[in-house]
Image (cartoon, rainbow, N blue to C red; front, side, top):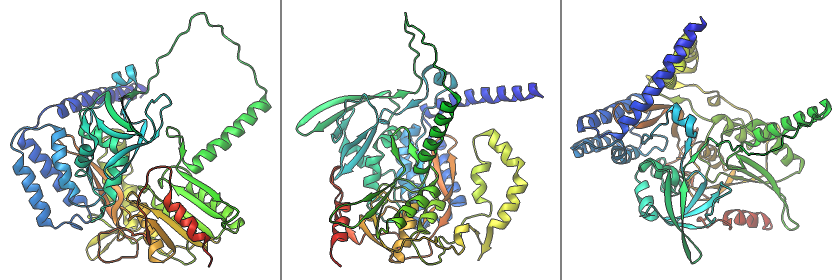
Length: 524
């Protein structure tokens, strides 16, 4: 039995190595027009088969025309990268942010990873912020960086930053006819988009400007493996033996620290929390609770909200600021949990989610690249079949997935009944927009900032299928469910709009939070 298991593992290992080499070779060669046309047809077929509302913001005739024009224009062999640049604007014309394609990247073999470690992008150590088609360094995560925070990025490898940003605008989209999402998304995702549109490099040269000074810096790709440094003539110091009681204290401390990190969703690389809570207190203003949520992902959110609203209740705090700027979304379960503290009425959080087929939500399991997962999925298929019988029901011929959030929900006993302010911007997307839709529709909050990138009337998300195009190896992501809150507005296709519109400013001056504090200080 053991020999059979080892033989299977050896086969998987050898297959993996050969598939990596084949993948790298395939994306580095030119593809014939026939191969590219086949990839386009393959992608369009998958969109029509899996996407629950493909023609929400574009007519079938318009999308068919764009597909045909793309195919007609490709008459010479092209690379996977060039094909991606031409195909991405067509997919973006669907106007649904969760539906997108991504250019293939060169993979590392096991041998390469063992020799040098796992590679990361040269831009990984930097965070960017954009204003008026200009790009600025917002944060630095590397200790040895000589880049100055706040510097404007003028060019990368002699390409003007403004030209790069203009080219990136064509590759992705927000939901509907929104115009606030893309400028922020391409600025913050500048490093990611640069890597997706350029040949892989181990170094890039940035030209930057700070105040009146212009300087240049190289950014280098990082490899995770650290070389062991052997020092000569070193003296080995015997380990100090600690008592059992001391070890117990250390274990308890580490356990508490781990629980704390999990509750707030600590990011080890960026050294920041996914969720933050604090009171803003002064001698002249009422106490204000400030909750910053960067993403509705990572960590034990239930403990975080339970603790936060318990503190708010104990402090008799009557004002909450929920900061959703830059929050691209996450879990339905988390935004439902948060909303249950912000309402005093029973509610239905989302409607039943429309799909194209009863088994659509299982597509990612059956089409995973991992053979082990495919085998596991096949083994539990009878259980999955019974599960979908209870979770999926047909209405007017269409299948709908019945989330527990589609049933009547109750607010928390200690719900907050004071005043709520929500700060939003173009990158308040997906789950952030669903939460904002509820708060806006029920007139529960005052919104400050800019229109959200996610649409008021819903989005295509839930579960996702990742499709690899057979020839170019481009990846396409398709949302499998149409998620709607039980509130809609007309005209369709726009985000949650602020009650108080305030433009972006450079880092260091939070004019949105300043306005909220000023508004709270006003006499009633």
